[in-house]
Length: 358
Image (cartoon, rainbow, N blue to C red; front, side, top):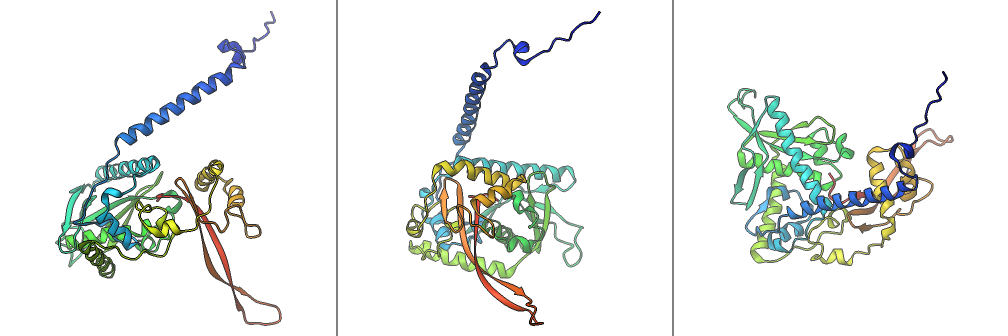
């Protein structure tokens, strides 16, 4: 007996017409958008209102490249611009990463104690909370054998920067200013604790936490404390320092940009909102996808052909386009001479980044 198999099509299996798929997809898309809106609303509900702290600077603010920003923090706390909902999600991820890393260390036998312990340096009006203390008694050589525990700070970083941050000097010299601040915060805790060293613990998506040792840095401490003393003087006099030269990566992320005149006077170019999908695509591909170079050539350009945003400085929502000039030296060896000679050339470097990503 020859039985012909029945071909089960999606329409037969679900009892629907192929034309119904578009209706279903639209309904699911609307439901997904409602779910995302509910998630954002939940984040917004957890938003903390701005607060005043005129009497102290946060240890986490040490190392900030703008003194005026640090004074605004003290004098204009209630005027701080609210972070975007995207920033709120990044803050949440950072807090949850810290909790996960502490759990990993505890299970591995290296529990961090005294989590969120307050430090107050009254003389310099600095305060902050340590992520934890690493217990090292009996593990350090002389003359440090009596040290019981040392400060540890946990920071999450963008996978894009991960491979470049292997030593404390890498962190101190990082191009991203918000990453360069991390050693200043830890160093303040080392100075307040009187500890000879500590740990900067970096974490990133899909990576084992990186434990970076740091010795107390008195030169860095002197630099940061001189800045704080100047900030304290301005706060006492209720005055503001002169603005720093405009830097799109600093000013574009400032919560007091609406108060600071240089940002208002900066000649930003406008970006049409219709460009947002392609900018978002670029930032996603920049992290993971091999198609990144194709989109980069279109937006930033190649050595032979500038892209759409080459040489531009602009901000659209939470995406910043920044350009800077850099002088490079090319060494060539012409056939007619034996010794190499240097040829200087000024080039324009353009980058596209999301504000606040580390």
